[in-house]
Image 1 (cartoon, helix red, strand yellow):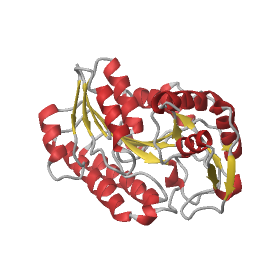
Image 2 (tube, helix red, strand yellow; image 1 turned 180 degrees about the vertical axis):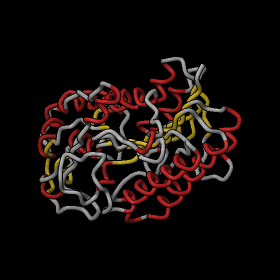
Image 3 (cartoon, helix red, strand yellow; image 1 turned 135 degrees about the horizontal axis):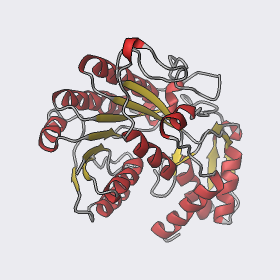
Image 4 (tube, helix red, strand yellow; image 1 turned 180 degrees about the horizontal axis):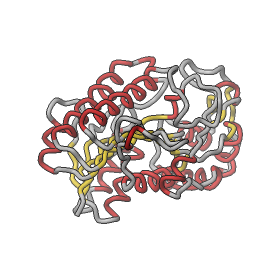
Amino acid sequence: MRTALVTGSSGFIGYHLCERLLAEGLQVVGVDNLSDYYDPGLKRSRQARLARSPGFSVVNDNVETPGLLMDLFARHRPDVVVHLAAQAGVRYSIENPRSYLESNIQGTFELLEAARAHPPAHMLLASTSSAYGANSRMPYAETDRADHQMSFYAATKKANESMAHSYAHLFDLPVTMFRFFTVYGPWGRPDMALFKFTKAILNGDPIDVYNHGEMKRDFTYVEDLVEAIRLLIDTPPVRPKDGLVPEGDSLSPVAPFRVVNIGNSDAVQLTDFIAAIETATGRTAIRNLMAMQPGDVPATWADATLLKSLTGYAPKTRVPEGVRAFVAWYRAYYGA
């Protein structure tokens, strides 16, 4: 029986991934600090649902705690590691950058040191579409340069990619970095637009619409994301012979390391996303049109060709369908 260690196991994506792995019969060791960045009660509810499975165990602590991950790796010898724990949020990184340094940089360092001592068969680490930063050519491809991050959050994630690459090269650790594109769905984060918009619309409150709605996002449904991660788990990168890398592949020429976009390959206008929420709730939004926020980007759009070539899979859930599922969950969970 394989063992997976999942950091951020009580987070939005971590919860859904753990459910999937447990359903397949894997032993899952979770790590989550139940931070108060958003409602810890929601995280505890997710964790309680996972704890119903005898295959799940969890440690509630910070990934940056010295020795914590080293001890877990030594005790459980995970075959697969999925590192999702991070301080998230572009806007919050302007207000509290230190929390990003501690969780995203120091926490990832602790993970890499533990993997160096007790190598898993494959490590998968979460990055972000924000790593593409000021790039204007779309859709974003993994082989594009990504040198101009526009928020400290994005900078820490790009740093994680570089850190992981160095360990992959030096210690032959197979590492896949995945860049997420605006993930949404049931059990989602309260700081994300879908959650905030749904709550406000149902309460009859106005919603803040940045850049006057002239923004596009590659909204990716969480179950599609989890399917992609699950398939990538069984697709570890291999150090290329003679440094030869196939065209279109982000595989490193000097390490078993690869970056993979996970996105819906569809840039959706924010106004259309709001319209889908209005349809799902049966209410009309009161829009408070605002300027673009610092650190934000006007559009994201994934080229998911590499994901498809590696796994045969492409995310397929359309926005109206995914939004309906979220609104149904929200109403059930909050009695709205």
